[in-house]
Every structure is written in C-alpha cells, then in structure tokens.
Image 1 (cartoon, rainbow, N blue to C red):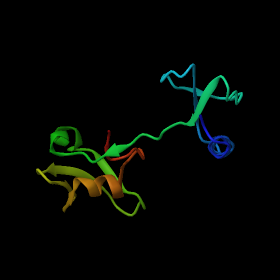
Image 2 (spheres, one colour; image 1 turned 180 degrees about the horizontal axis):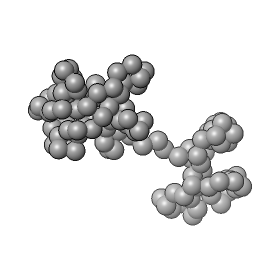
Image 3 (cartoon, rainbow, N blue to C red; image 1 turned 30 degrees about the vertical axis):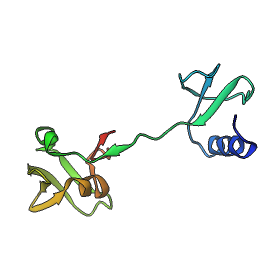
Length: 116
C-alpha cells in the first residue's frame, strides 16, 4: 500500500508529463494508462520506469563499426572505425565503451548503449 506522499508523487509526475502505469488485483502485469482514474483501492499506479542502458562491449563490434556518432553537445561527429577489447575507435580517438555511453549519441539521437 502506498503512502499519501507516494501517491501524491505519482500524481505530480503525471501532471509533469511522465508516463504512468497501472495494474489491478496485485498482478505484476503493468500497462500504461493515458487518463488514470486514481482508483487506489482497486489499482496500483507507478511512474513508468525508464529503460536502463549499459555500455556496449567488444561483442558488439560488428554492429558498431561504420555507425556515425556525435558528442552529446554536438561539437564532434565521426564514424566508428574500429574496436578493441576495451576501447572503440572514433575517428582518430580511442575511447572506452563507457565513455561512448556517457558522452555520445548515434546520429539519430539514440543512446550509444544497450538495454540492460
């Protein structure tokens, strides 16, 4: 059972534009709801969890080589040209895979990492 503060936080998140999910009858089958009724007695509500990403690794090399990436501040765009066990080659720079996740995006603004 959620506290009043937890319920308010979920409703505030909804007002702030975040996606809300609900489930009924204590099931773990969450579905997104567009206009929640806030029936706290018959349903559970939560803020839809954000996807979690982890860095690529060497096993992803074939997928990554040839992809165009850019820094998150858009001051550098280049192609991934190679991969080593612990680093990826972007242009003339070798960076660790975790830096690719933290500081780069693919050209279409998608995240340079894989879902956990």
